[in-house]
Image (cartoon, one colour):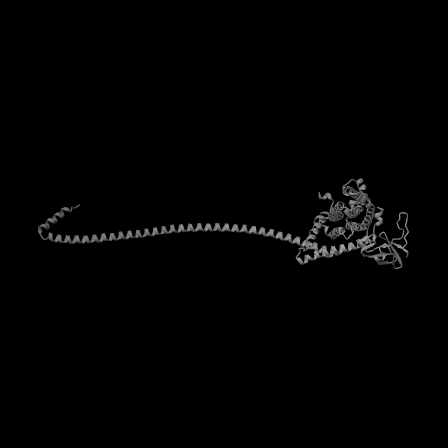
Length: 166
Length: 366
């Protein structure tokens, strides 16, 4: 211990302290501050980049979810549209059928009634012609019949027989 | 001192192992006898070498030869405060051979210490063979100070280049910064934030980072063959621990002092007993920091040097390769110790700062 104290060099202690403090301040200014700042900056940059990547990933996820939702909606819409269209088509067809049937019925009915009317007219005409013909025949018959006096009397008598007084 | 015992036992162990190997290996005992004298010389030389290495020096020597007195290296400036500032190069001492004259005063280098002498360089000794001459106030740029400057420059260059690479490269480090940036983040996330908390950690970051990288690089440069020894100097670790102590005290809040003088949540007699213990702890904590780092690095240097020294003591292939292998293993261990000690110093400093700036009492958290 005595030897240690004896050998202790105050000059060396002085120089070591002085040089070390000088080194400390020089390094602090020219090395440690820029180095630590650069490391900090880099670490923060990495952290920021990671955060951003995470955010982007989340956004991406949201986006895909959105897309899927939209796609699903679109599909549903399409289906409903198709269904509507089908229904419309069917209803249109059936309506058209109905209308056509009605129209046809109407035409048939009209034709029927006109045929009936024609028929009636023809019957009336025929009746009239028959009546005229029969009158003409009757006239001729009567003329021929009434050419003989006996026959006239006989006829009157017959007719009188037919007519009864009530 | 106990470190030295450890070294002794380690060395002894090695001696036993290697001698037993040697005994089988060497055919003639005569040769063995002849070598004992030179072996002793080697041992003292190695001891001397180790002592010189772990001590601070006024020269930056890569290599020296004790026989010829040759030194390969360069001298460093000596700065003394003794009747004003005296500055001269250490080459004036001629490795203790000559008396250096500066501004009318005479100085002599004796056992790596500067003493004030007269013009002839006469030293007077006491009964323990210690010189009694006055030691002037010494602020020399010694080998350790020089190494500190080199390490500081290195740390500064590495981390300013890392800081610049962010601006150039779009907040991504380039080159060597790729290796150091995770360490900076580790100190922030695993040392500073858990020990101090999110709220206060920022103001301590500069100190923690600087202290970590300074100690680590200092420890590493200590393992290089240049023979620098920074963190194995008590003065260096004392200065670092002193700064931790100052920062702890000056950033402390009322809660910290309340925990020291009037510990909450314990009965009053305990509070009275705890107060002096806690107060003592304030000083023991940085003291332990200082001793831990110093002892670990100092011991590591001595162990490596001793084992390498064995290479020259046993001039046999087996002994040599054994000590080489052991030195290699210990060197690898020292690489681990280098970063471990830097980590421990930083971690404990952060913990002390955490105590100083803690706001809530722990009971409120649970």
